Length: 279
Image 1 (cartoon, rainbow, N blue to C red):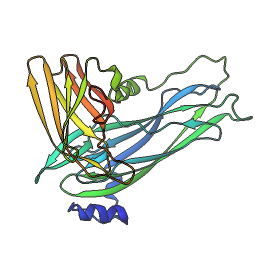
Image 2 (image 1 turned 120 degrees about the horizontal axis):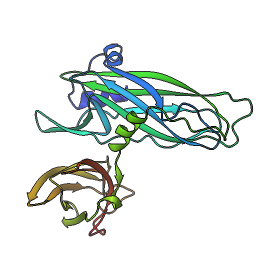
Image 3 (image 1 turned 180 degrees about the horizontal axis):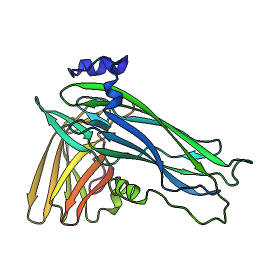
Image 4 (image 1 turned 90 degrees about the horizontal axis):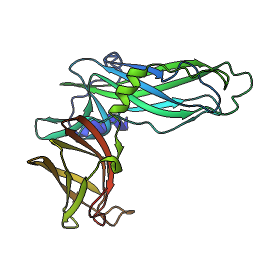
């Protein structure tokens, strides 16, 4: 009920939670980057969400309305799974300057895992499952959920690796945020005041930038402007800071989308005013 109350407070036209349309508008599938798993082998799982045309679901930070898409994965005993990794989202602005961060079309959430070595005695196949939840919106919104399962046979350590779904994972990984350190020459410079700080992102050779902030209890984005000057691009983020019990200084984290002549990439950053030149 708390999720529904949140949406109602944000004035979204949310339909009855019992309506099955939210389930039908998004299809969930669980896939792997290999056809079999060997002892001690690293692997990746993909939560593939297919959103009907004209509809969208939400990123890990939904923005001014909506709520985040989530996925809970279960693996066999002894297997380890890392955190859920979202691809870079899209920025959407609705009437009233309501800014949200969304996914459309086909979306792959990636989870990296590792098999135990040795595998549990007698394990001939590894069964994985996922329970995903979302809010799917157009002019109206429907909460939805879906479950998917995947069983992979196990193989001996000496067996040849068996890749699978190579294109799907290559496409998904190309949209996963990279470390900020891989963005050559990029800077984050701070200015403004403590209560109204400003963070300026500069990326040499970029034709366009976009900012997707992580959710924060203390530092919120009040607006952003994009400046293009010759071969470079700068994004100025105006922020509001209200100290939370555990924070006594502004801090901005999130993802920066960078477009260049070579294409589009995403980079994850975490920066504070004391970090004058980098994330």
